[in-house]
Image (cartoon, rainbow, N blue to C red; front, side):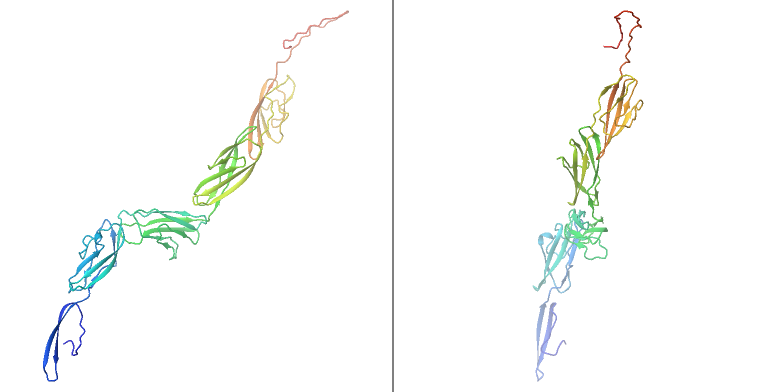
Amino acid sequence: MLSQTDQLTVPVSGTDHYTVTAEDTYGCTETATVVVAGGPVDVEVPDVVKGCTDEVIQLVATNLDPNDTLTYNWYPPDKVSDPNAPDPVVTAPPGTYIFALAATNQFGCSDAYPIQVVVVDEHIALAFDHTVQCDGLTVAFDNQSQAAFDYVWDFGVPGSSADTSTAVSPTFIYPDTGTYVVTLDIAHDVGCVTPAVDTIVLVEPEVKADFTYDYSNCSEDAIEIAFYDQSYNAFNNTVSWQWTFSNGLTASVPNPVITVTQEGPLVASLTITTAQGCSNTTTQTLSIDFTEVTLASQIVLCKGDTTALNPDGDPSYQYEWIPAYNLSDPHAANPLAWPEQTTTYTVRITNFSADTCVLERSVTVFVPEEVQVDGGPDRIACEGPVLLNAVSPQAI
């Protein structure tokens, strides 16, 4: 006996027959039977089903009411092997989906169950690159992954829970310089995924343009100058060198060579630019001073005489004359020479201006054959005139 009152609450599951007996005050009774059928659908499905394309991804619906005979309808029907089976195989291409199951029992009662379905391409490849911005702490990440979605970034800040992102290619500002291990993964733990991991090193940002130069070739009216980039870039990613010179010349290579044909100040400027657009400029002024040489090509010197080799020589230059014999001073601007025979003197002239400029020139001291003359024998004459007859093979 379930109750002795005129009301009874009973569960609904399948089909049940309930009998009620009524009795009056005289003891007379009457019996009636009530059939209760139906009940709610009770199905268990997983919240999330995920897998890779190289494995079977199966949906499973479990009927928890043994009294129910269920009809199944899976949505979307074109992305499962059998939309009316309790355990169809997912046939959807890679991606994230919300599937739904509509289950109906034999009494027409139904319920719907959503399921997240994740299909990951078996050929997924996670990869990324990064660029440190000019402030040294802001890092732009470039996602280079293939066949991936639903990204999860961990920027590797120790003790931080705010160092993550789900953007495709995020930008993150680090709290300080240092070394950080960055991980790129997806939000789904499946067997075909290998996270991408890289270590980035952040240093104090410094981009400083600098250069040196030297004279690679000199003449009296032109100087060839080689410039050498000596810049410092903490990011080690210089992509542009822009040289400008006050004489109108320009260059866009790290180490240019220019030829200057005018004396006076030459202003040289170098601007370097990094891959992320950081730039810095430096300027130097060179004093261009040509080396003036007024050396004669030949000097005729009578044997036994002395001559000056470079009367207009500039004493601010450094000289080195060779050969040094029969010279008053091989380091003088204008040495005296008394060679006994024709001699070619080579002089190395060094001009210390913006840089060392060295010229080599030569002068030949021609010493002709010594003049021979014979005036004839001595004469004694009582009366004149007397004819003297001189003979010289060199006379003209």
